[in-house]
Image 1: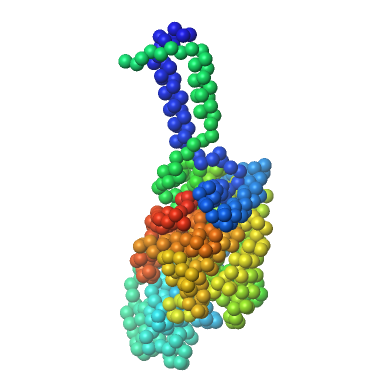
Image 2 (image 1 turned 90 degrees about the horizontal axis):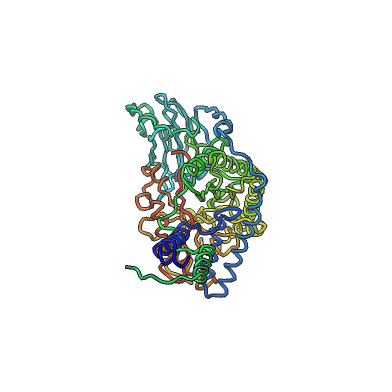
Length: 230
Length: 367
């Protein structure tokens, strides 16, 4: 043995190098912890809290963070115990997709309702008109645009296109409400009772109910997003 | 030429033992900043505009499909923003965002329906993540402190009473959802939490529609009191008008008397509160505001905030840039938002923390 070692010192060096390399690989490739039971988020955040605890020098902070940590550990304990009843995954997920709900029947015409804030449209709406123009479904709201200063306005949305716009009525008072429609020509009234006319197809207010404006060319429909289950 | 050295059996044995110990030793890690950089893979959160089960399933399926297609274990946090809390004829629920595929109609979902819909999201994730059984999604069931619950009586005590009801119900819903995940076996990959977009200030027309700290803390306290110690919520709001340094004197205004102490409380100080703030602004200002809240907590309230992640709205801006001019300065990429938060909190010993785990970017369910 001794002779063999003396004879092959490079073998010893090589073996040592392999061991060191193995250690390095282990260090570099190791996950933060062994995969814990329960949600990853909880474990990761618990580790973040523990790391903060380790550097914190404030006893109040330590106690506080410990209480948050305890809560995460409780979550971990209660949500990690379901490994016994894990269901099989479906071979074809789309085959068990829930049935699509029927598209609600859409009634063209005017609908008035108590003023409601549509924060996503930055408006406070009082009424809606829906109808078809050039084969495209159009929704129009009337109300107040939530800008400074607030502005009575009409919103126009052409379904499944990028054709959408807000049309302020500078002369109107406070808010607008759609009171009736003749085709795509809307009659609106502001808070003071003044009547306005808006031609949806032309996207313009009319100076008189008889005014004729050219209809705007329709924009192309959007490319549909790929269906997850074609 | 290497020098030959003698090797006894004892030395050989010693070498073998040392090698064995090294290989069996606890794992050592490089510093976190080396291990976790670059930013985490971002997830997509959604403003919910149509809560139909098949639509919710599809959203969950999209994330599940993505995670399954990426090697290794993915870990995501998504917020499903169901809009504002709303009461109709005594029934509590939410008014979700307007649906462009249905005349911009806004669905009302009661609590049972919200619960059902988030389960469909979870089911979609489970089904479509396929053979990937290790990836995980935390689903934040989101709402907001915006608006007056469909009330004409906007007295603060009335609104707070309703906020308390909602907070209690929200915690119950999260608990029931997690119980369902455990009993159905999905909890291996899914965790439900609450989530709330807490903000304040006036709308652009000068009207105050967000709620005060008095009302909002009704929600957070009721959530805390009814979470069974096992549910949490994320605040994914903005720190409106906040300074970029801690201030004991700062208050938003007399109508909306939010202070940094209030922000800290609803984002971290309350037991179930965790924070994944909106870091939208391109110049990093919002991140500095949140770092200041964390420092305020560190200096005056006993704890910095350990941020769980950052939220951005890059995709929402891509969808609606034309109708939202604010996107010009509020469209951080997920990496930018996350990086700004990291830089802001780690610029100060009072706020430094391990890297936030999550990056999520919100978009509209429909363009």
